[in-house]
Length: 266
Image 1 (cartoon, rainbow, N blue to C red):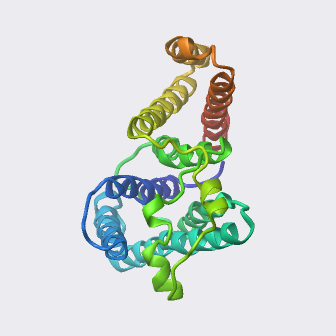
Image 2 (image 1 turned 180 degrees about the horizontal axis):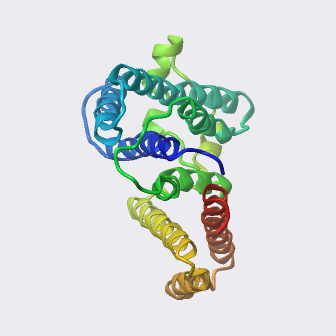
Image 3 (image 1 turned 135 degrees about the vertical axis):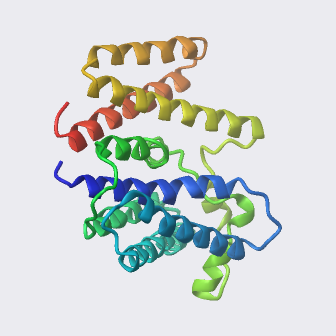
């Protein structure tokens, strides 16, 4: 896939901060209103983006990078509108449109194509981008494909930032709320297992990309085999076995496909 090293680096930074900071900030326990927490989160996002450019690019005009950082923060904040639109549609029709969430990373990918700086360090930043993409963004795609996307927590069904956009609170029918929470573990232990499973999936995709990029594609089967051995006791459950097989194959295809597209053939 065509693209300068600067583009892959900027895109890796943009997606890394967009998803990485969100994961970290989402685990913080604060008594502040959700709207205030979200504004703080985006301010931290802007500060980190603004500070990163001068460290990684040599011919950087800070005003240009600051404008880029502001643009990326604004694009990321569009998630509020898309989430609001999706929930409005769900409340009226019970049809889930989780796919709208992917308009944000697609917009970021297009926007970063407009900027071209010279990286301060020589490196193949396509690999850096793949490591970022195959982490949180890829996990989001897999959850959607498995029909296990992560909706808003129950106590945030009426998400405060929506009030800033519309002036009202979003109320869902009981049927829609049940449809939104379908597939989401109810117990804390289930949530923890899901988080561990996502981390294992991320490491699996990273390892596959490194193996294939280094010319050891034949070893990819060992990764899948090792993962299957650990899961073997649970494979007697047909429903779990089908879920596990589909999720694993999708994860592998995503790693191989993105590596092929970004690296231009493996």
